[in-house]
Image (tube, rainbow, N blue to C red):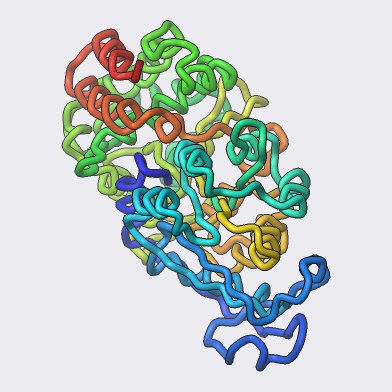
Length: 455
């Protein structure tokens, strides 16, 4: 979700997703209820206000937020700030904008940035820091990140050795959607290794099924689901260290590691025996929208669909998404049952002001308190915050995602195309893999993407 290059995909991915507010009884943290600016329909639970007293008297101060998160997903965000506002007397002003990814850079360069921006991509974060307008995170925020997040997450918020931005929300991309009832009726078991995934796929073929369904059509962003497929397999076949070098172009895009990864994807998606259940042949993947593809699981015409946690938003509201429901998901396994590579995306909290109220707000957002408050208010949201209790998640997929992220064996890597130069990540990578699924060979595909890398 996914940054300037992923903005189109994030909007279509979340289209129709509803974030549900949960009402709590509010006990004022500091001062009486009147100091909070009036009553609200959706209230939040009380929190310990002690961590914010260190920032001094903040009553009457204002913090502005700028983000790409818009209605209806913005409602639980706004509600999650209420405990902080009650504690401190600070007013948080929220501005959501679908053009955020381009406009935030314009505003920063013009000297008119917000106090805080939710940046959905490490590459964009680096660009914003390069303007000279961003400020390093306060030590209180950094201490929270050291306590509640892994080093990999902290690294994505660090530029030139200086820590700027704490992680906010995240989503898990390494998921495979399936029908629990079909698995039960057919005696299938959830695979725990890549070899077991291949064995399961072949068993489904033997049972006269087309196991996989896939779609990559997404308007101007057509092709992005294939980049996720390749990144997931790059993590699994080449390992996280090589993945990092590939993303940074320290190894060529068309090298042997990338070739093996794309060929591994092709082993599934370019195999006519495996795809495209209920939709057509291999080439139908290019003309099928990613939103529609996984719905075939409910019809029984396909059995498996690799897509991120946010895909839950595409099922009808009457669909039961649970381990014993109409549809659910399992973790896309690694080479063995102990390694847990996880492809993710998410947002980071970058400040452009170092006023006490801004520092206090950054500290709140990086805390376990905020993560659990937000979890209770949202559906379709998760965080990698280690202080998050998965039992606070609103639905089974969110709980599954949180459990994956919080697994001590998890090796998290950010969406590679969102960190590559735009000429590659949201242009050549999308277009060339689309050509690949419709017949272009692997070598030509990767050679063309390599040629697109800026010199």
